Amino acid sequence: LSLHDALPISALTARFANEPAGLDALLLWLQPVAPFLVVMEATGSYHTAAATLLQAHFPLVVANPRDVRDFAKACGVLA
Image 1 (tube, one colour):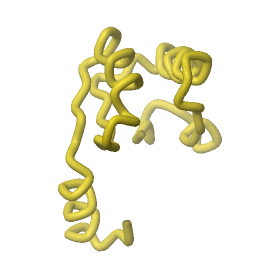
Image 2 (image 1 turned 180 degrees about the horizontal axis):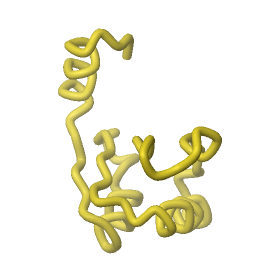
Image 3 (image 1 turned 135 degrees about the vertical axis):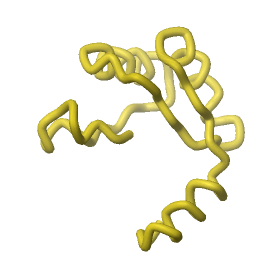
Image 4 (image 1 turned 90 degrees about the vertical axis):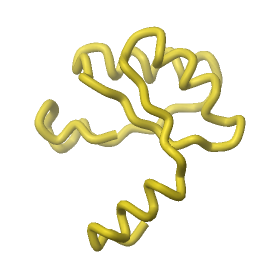
């Protein structure tokens, strides 16, 4: 999640449980920011609940993890 322009550095990182209460907390955390686009990695079946919730509220892209890693490597970032 990249919110560098929208939030102070202390608010850029958060962790949410992959269960209904955690997904509700994720939604509450994102709503004040009103992101233009949310991008998340596909994680087998683990991303499905979060993707379903997020796409109901924000534009969403589910990215292939290999593509994300290759992009990071091209940028010189260890991923």
